[in-house]
Length: 86
Image 1: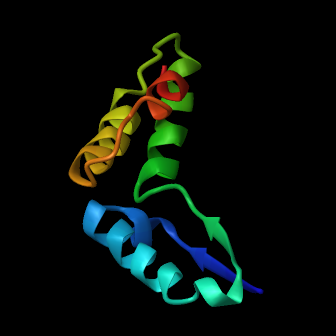
Image 2 (image 1 turned 120 degrees about the vertical axis):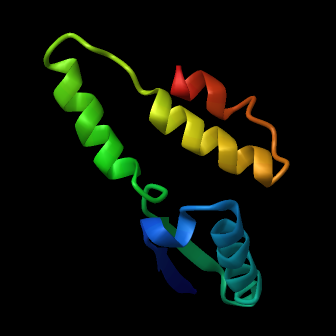
Image 3 (image 1 turned 180 degrees about the vertical axis):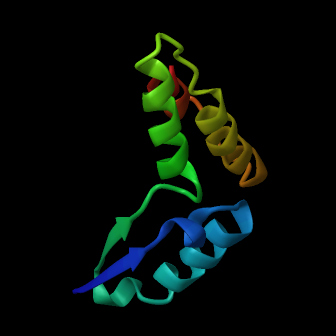
């Protein structure tokens, strides 16, 4: 078993996600456990959304757009993620 932790910048783009995938794939024989941070800039965006929500403005579109863009580039379906983003 191996624990593999990847930070936000490691997951910030589709190319970076592919790179992480290759690293994990090369270690599958070690039964990896993955610890993944929020994709690049998501934590900052969540804080901003929370601050705006305190003033009654609820808008998480920046977060949704970045996640859906990466899924699109990876040619993956958003059917499981979209309900969570709503």
